[in-house]
Image (cartoon, rainbow, N blue to C red; front, side, top):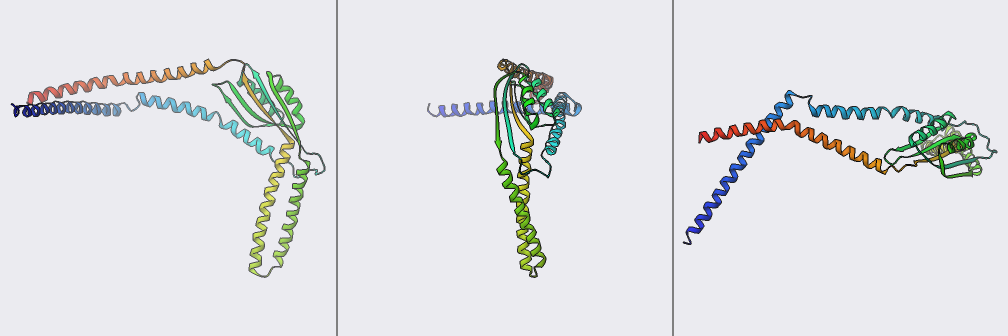
Length: 298
């Protein structure tokens, strides 16, 4: 009695393994048939659904990228022109830097931003940077306005919507400007003296030491000159920082847009699944046929 139980267990385990191996074999047959059919279908229809989808995505991405370089290059060119002030500057004049901030509430954020940017450029100003967030209906812009046009520019911006916040600051940098200009003059005088010493030097070691010092002084002159030009730009062009936002609550619009995007993605997935149903059906037919042939051989 006890010897029969192990035999029964062995028989059950063996039958279980045989059934499992049969299922695995059938699954491999179905997978192989489906793979062959998909490869053949892909070869015959290289421009199918997936190709069309990638073409649409690439065309949309290309159009978005192509719309921005023109404006970016224009702003870059204008900023480079604006950052090269005249070489001659009156050191005795008062150097005042003016900056302004304004928060504007309006109905159409994108249109208001476009008007502000157009006005700045029409006054020979330029855009340092601007950002527009469609989902939250909010925009930020840093505009450089000629200092003489700052008051009229602020008056224009106030008409674009309801001003929620406004601030204006001024800083007198006359002393820093004169000190920096004097520093540059002293460095240039030191550079001239070193050049004279270099011409009189007879030892190679002395010449190398003078060259190293000339290189260091030239770097300091260029660095301080760039600071001086930055001061000139800040004085000539006032910075106006704008925050523009909508009176409407765009949260529902944002959620609706997200839902729409998710729905479109699900719809595309459904179309993709339906497109592969005929291939799966054909693979199943091949699987059943192979299974019947194997049974007949047995």
